[in-house]
Length: 188
Ligand SMILES: [Zn+2]
Image 1 (cartoon, rainbow, N blue to C red):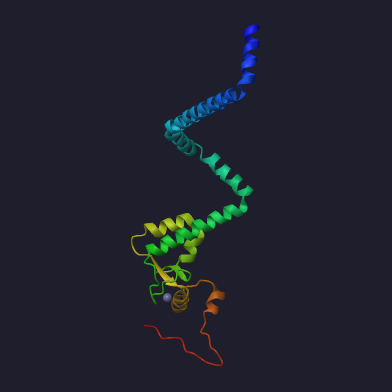
Image 2 (cartoon, rainbow, N blue to C red):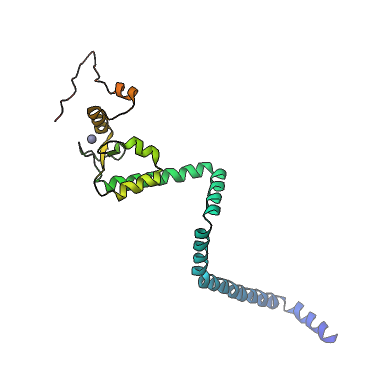
């Protein structure tokens, strides 16, 4: 009992010293703990990544379902992501196809469009997803696609009358401005 009493007395007298010792001990061990956590993480990082990769490969339905759920919860973010993806891919395609209108040479990406040289673009677009469509353009080796600006594209449509829609075709009839009549430019 006497020694306990003595210890208590000693602590009271050396309060600052005791506190300082505790602080140091905690600091030292916290760092140790953190260090071991970090080391464990570094050691197993590749393993963890590989595990996730394998899981994704093995569970395509679950991944799809998760994505669907995420999109339901974050519709705005999902749309944003799609927009970003489409924009990036559009730019890559434009770059891939030369970056300028094949007729007039304009390079403004805002008006550049992908044109099917021999027509049929609408039908193809309707039957494919965006991803598939982009893939098709990138893997094309026979030069099926070209870049045209919106104006040249409409002029080409008018010239070749490739639009299957009757209303559209009528819209493509020669425009006669009653005040300042202009004749369509002759071919060639
Ligand atoms: Zn053009």
